[in-house]
Length: 411
Image 1 (cartoon, rainbow, N blue to C red):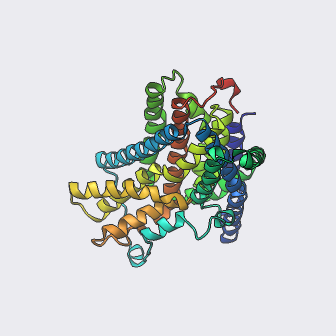
Image 2: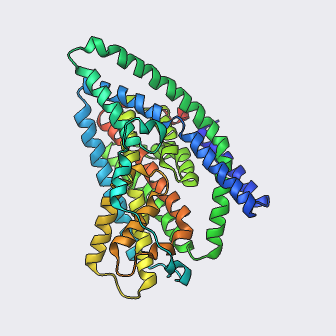
């Protein structure tokens, strides 16, 4: 059975359970929230060791084959351009389509929140590289630590001395990959709990009807991006006559992204589909997938621009000055690169910062969308996950580090 079918079945079971059983009581909601957090913790369990040892192998092989510069240029170029594209799509869609205003309540205007940009930057770099082993959010530190070891073990004058280091890392990378395969299979069952919790939250959001137009806009933008724009880019940039197979390989990661909203939880599943479905070689996937997961958060910028301008129009009937539109675009785009230390909820945090930095009475206006934070973050994670799949595929094709598989052989 295909992996995406397993996830679809798990999600369908979770949906049915949430709709049929009486789970709306506070005690059941608390239990479901606990189960959701437990499943996320279990799913993150293998992320850091898999990333660490695979990065060592990737850097060692890329530097030995003299592909590190070319791979880096393609990876970072796509990260920047995809974030720019998604931010532009978000701001154009909300400017072209005027969504209904959201009612402003007294309760929303009396709360407060404070978060600094400095804390976002510091969240990327904890006090010690070993903190990454304790906390699964610090993927950048894990990546850099593995990169240093892989870099030095590749061309050091005492290559024979460091060869056992590479051999050990290579073995452990394969070991943790096999463990990750097991975890991704189990996650198709565990996602029943995630889906139950997500369904109850989504039901409470959608029943008000207030946020439905915004959700529809997110969905239309998602279909436009993954169904039209990304396949066209693959078709003409990679000369691939079957660009939709990348989308097919992204189905299971997209499902898990939507219901979990957690970038780190989805990463092992994304890496697995990149390798076993698309044929992306480990040296490319071990380099590009983590960087996309950490820095390519254009989906967060897209939903943030839509959310902020919706808030602006809910407070004022005046048109937004062009200078302010440029400011919203630049800040959303720029700050999206600092969300690597926040694998879950980053989109709403970005919206919060945007409101507080804009000031002019908007400091607490983000509370207008707080009830819909789950949906905002879910769509942001889906955009980012599919961007990672398409982006890494482009890098693999352009650096010739891919072995194309027939679609029948996709997992």
